[in-house]
Length: 322
Image (cartoon, helix red, strand yellow):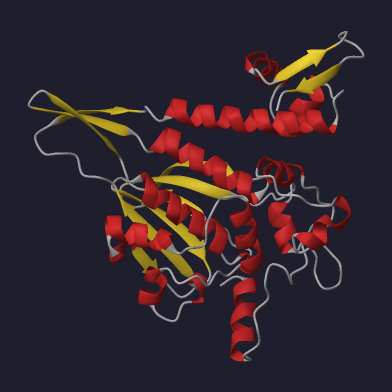
């Protein structure tokens, strides 16, 4: 057990309320929220800079940045991993790490990676007829990954992970899942989130609707056995679709272009937010803010039909079409 798990168990024996991510002081106090604000802007969520931290519950009772502020900040640098194992977990053959960004950016980055790189389409030819089938059902994965991000007990300072095997993928999150009394109640999707303020923000960002239908979708597709609930861990095991017997198939990655288009659109919106905030911002400054190369920004601007540079190369400004 980690130190945080031991503390949580000890508080449980005293029948005290466990610490939440809004009670816990962040280990980092110099935090910025550029990416989080971009998501708020994209969804039309209004806020006042003077009361930003109070509006989104980012402060402890003592007025310091809390653990939720850390999760939403540009300085969140914990590692959320996607790991591939050969066989049934014997040999680690790939590890991809996501971090150094707002937790919602990491949510989308992992989602885009899994859609574009892992959920391949297999093409079958049965009596001359073509049939395309994904490796696993996207709806179930999205709901399970969303739950892992929103309902992980971050007060334990442990983070969701995804493990890939030959026949399945596993999504792991930490903490007793959603404070449910029974497995049946959990599967029915009664809404009892661990991180209430984080879930409310996710609703505003249109990431979740908090109807509890996500677990029902997972059960409808794969059944109850996909949930493995341990003492302080929830594992969702999503099996891969079996290839059809006696058919020929080839692996294809047709989802990659879709994911790239989604990523391109998201980056364009981030560039637009920066330009609106500072119409005279330089291309290199935009690149530094987003974390890409200057050439990438130049290509994006060239392709965009919403961004226009007005005036001389030195002394001009950006104009953005709504």
